[in-house]
Amino acid sequence: MVTETVTNSFLQRLIGAAALDVAIYEEVEADPSAMGQAFTIVVLSSLAAGFGASGLNGASIANIGFISIVALIAWAAWALITFEIGARLMPEPQTRVDLGQLMRTIGFAATPGLLRVLGAIPGVTIPAFAITAIWMLATMIVAVRQALDYTSTARAVAVCLLGWLLAGAMAVALGLVFGPTLS
Image 1 (spheres, rainbow, N blue to C red):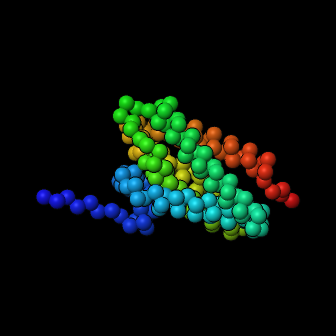
Image 2 (image 1 turned 135 degrees about the horizontal axis):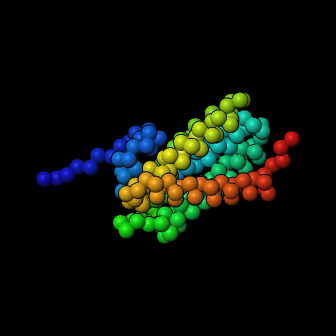
Image 3 (image 1 turned 60 degrees about the horizontal axis):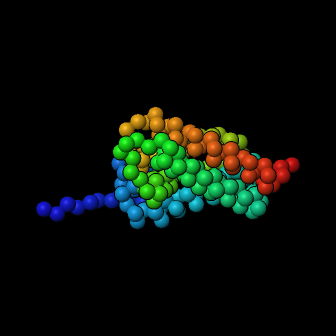
């Protein structure tokens, strides 16, 4: 008997990732060909942050570009910090993960970040960024729990919160040191 594996479309994966669907995260973790999709989500989410932030400080190309790059660096820092904490410092006995598996799952966890583009609407910037940040934290927790094969959601929460705080501090420091001046 031949077993057929059905994979979801990219759009189905986006919706499932945003909806915290554990099965989608397991599918993406097991699918090495999903790395391109995960990378696309991260890049688009970073660009959405750049465009969305224009609701606060104007839509100059320099500001959009800078904020997009900082968002991308912050995501990469969060991903790598999470890998180090989750796989090396706080693994459970059954934790077996490679960097690719984790990058694919947490790449899809960036899906809610696509909505940061709504921040370009005056008066919506701060709520859009706050809601998507919390939503991305929730998707990251699911992604980390699945990729690191944790049985404890509390452990995934601790790993993600610690990584989020460290990456956020780094993004703020980059913004303060190298960012455009606000008038």
